[in-house]
Length: 408
Image (cartoon, rainbow, N blue to C red; front, top):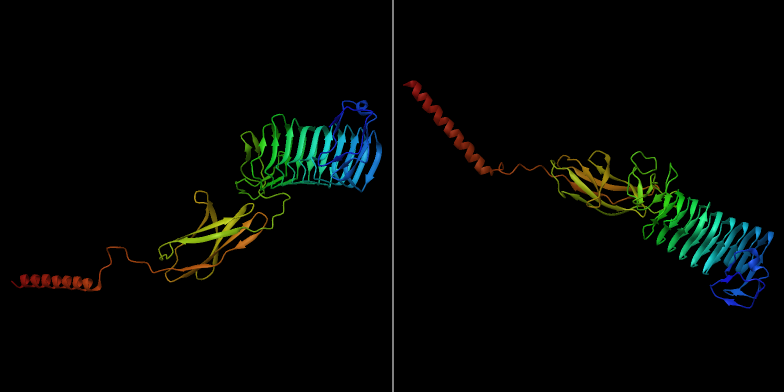
């Protein structure tokens, strides 16, 4: 760190992953500071610009690029380990490749900064922002950093259309406010975001939160929908009875952080993986014509199962019924009604996710047995014959006795 050092020269330093950070209270604090190109970061030269206006930089591979007290700057298509922007206004950066450093992008005390279409990878801090407002982070890949985006006193900022993936924490904010996080994919981070108690009025909507390992944290007063639409949360287990794409019950990040309009399927994340049908069973295994059959299916999806259908052949045609998920046993359950004896019943399971990916199981079958007589009513044939014979003899004897009485 260089703090308020003016009229000094820095040269011939070889830096590995730890860039030069220049901090100042006023512009004059670093007046006369010179950082020459023979300094290197990760074997590439360091370039330093002070009090520069209306300039463009296009192309090149640079170890570190520093802009301090600059205005109206455009940087495009640059490979860099660290891009440092301090005390500057209206700096636009596009197609930046910043990786393998302590900081990919470091912004401090600046206004109207744009980072777009860039790749920020394998840093400790992918993007590190302090005391900055009116920033736009758009269409960037922020991947494999310890912290994807770390902010302190960030405000009036838009974070949109980014893919924030495989970071320890995707977005960690402290003392940040009045910003919008929209249409981003938070994918396979240990934790997608952490907002401290001093964060307020940060609005999240149309974001996809998928495959996170740890639940996100919101200790501040922030919003997780825009009043009509929210985000996709992989952990959400609600239903969508009216099929409008929004869950019928809210999603709670914690007790006082609520998405009132959670999405049933991801907004941007592309899902091409069909559900998996792990097992199918039915009971009873050999039903009679008086018994219905219950079918159980173990069905999962990498995101969320939309519906499971039991399709069965009753001897004359195929009939489809919806299987319902039983949370107690963790299986989908459907019923085939009782069918006539000797009917060979065939059935199979269809499953669909919210992206329209389908899977169908093997075909299973069973044959309906004849209905057995109730216990206690089944008598051997010989006993039946004897019983009928005895009854007949009794009837004849009674008839003869009545006839003799009449003759007397």
